[in-house]
Image 1 (cartoon, one colour):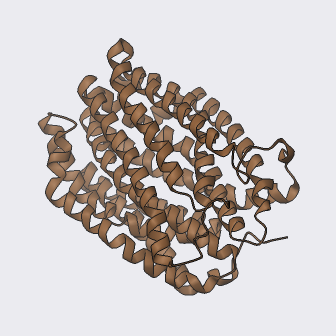
Image 2: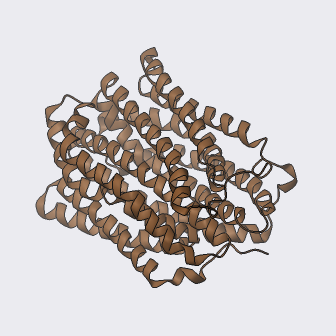
Image 3: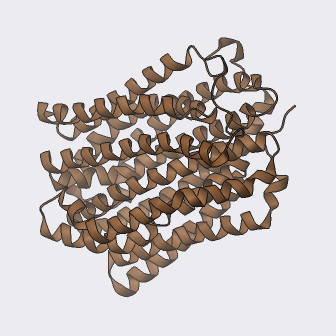
Length: 447
């Protein structure tokens, strides 16, 4: 029995929807967990807890920058090889990818734990929450080492057209996390408890992922392939280095946003944290689109069927129309209800509602941005995504700093800056698509 699913065969729209739906459910479950995690922290610890975890977010993003590099490479390489004439090439690269993910995970944890004081001071973290922030981030980063390997495995499973198994694995993991959160917080661990629960769930996810791939002919860890030849390392560097550096530019925007919001103290940090929770929900909806596009485009590119890209994009636009509508309606009619879930502080509620309505314009563009971004990743053109991230980061910095200097209104400046970040990204990728340059850019070649 063959593994995975070749998404290039059969009805394209049907394949895309069936592949994307489990991704969407998986990511929504993750978002629900993040919201519940925020609720537990906000209700059981208070606004100081929300502010502490908010100030940890850019540090977490740094770790995800390294993780994003390895998982994106895994998705691109495995999806293109899966639809090629020689699937055995997956066996040659997957074990080295697992090993690299572990090495990078350990390196990242050591680097960030040893420099956490630097980062928290850089974010202008309120002195009242620095201790809690340190407690949370140290434990979280230890768990993140296991997550590096687990998410790499999940990316490989999805790249061969299987989005249902990751749904089951991650759904079980999130339930475990949701149950453990209040238990560890109430046991007296406080903010540490939330981090312990998250770290344990990461370990559990890795165990489930490993149990699945150990019976996989294509994706299992195989000692026979523990080797790093020059061709593999060159391909990894060409694809991965731009992605990792690119993620750091995204982090720079988060550092700016947290720093600006912290200028208003704990109220500002709490406001930013609450709205960020909603942004995460929309982001993971967009990531479902991104993963779908990366894998579908990658599989077609693996067969050199560039002529199908137009059909993939048309179907993608059809798929994102409904999520965009839902996002807009939610922001308009249900923002206040959502915000009150986290806090009873009227000042935070008012400020969060104001910020949500401005930044929400940018949030509504996320599905379109992720559609285009996934298309470019599926091609394997990480150099373009790298240079685009530089442009969008500069754009946001210019708008945020200029407007904040003129208006002295932190969240107006942040909201408009976020909108301009997405507009810059969408414009570049749209121009690239209509230029048709991707017809000559299959970066994963056979031989």
